[in-house]
Length: 64
Image: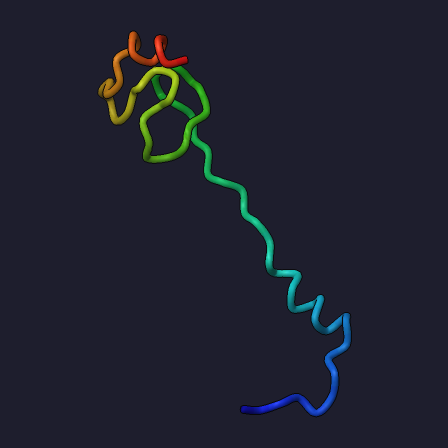
């Protein structure tokens, strides 16, 4: 296994690590109610997705 001849400086290591960062999650708006939701998921507030309601509003109101 290869070993480095010299120690890497702090700045060299930190330059490499600058790219290790979190990315913002994708957010879209519901076409039915306008709330923020994750893309390709049913809206948590109204249950609407792709022109259809998948979750009944009564069930959503009881769980909240």
